[in-house]
Image (cartoon, rainbow, N blue to C red; front, side, top):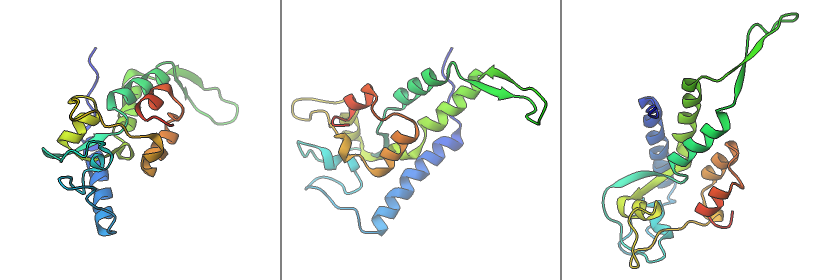
Length: 173
């Protein structure tokens, strides 16, 4: 069975959250160009060991891959149950397993949380995700201590801290 698509409202809120953070950083004078050929708005350029120039359109990227978030949350919730019934004194409720749609609603909320995102150029985004790497343009690795505070809040809120897959993606965590 195919994975359901996230509601448009969630993906739009994701984009707005990233864009709002960028606008705030610009307004507060916190953006700077890390080297010639890099764009100030490209968060990943700041972590490029080869200092390759930015290219392609700017894109919102997930620090923790969306597919990873979906898989981890699915595994955590597939056996979850919810308390149902009247909770007034003297009445009994019961527990039922979460329905598939309910699990996917929760997964989509986690997967499209804008705290797990920033803006990067297409070139750096592809290298960060490992889709376009070469000896001249190796994969971009971001050490865990260099993740922004909003990403650390996200990691803590979803209980990801200390997970083996997280340490592999962000060494030093």
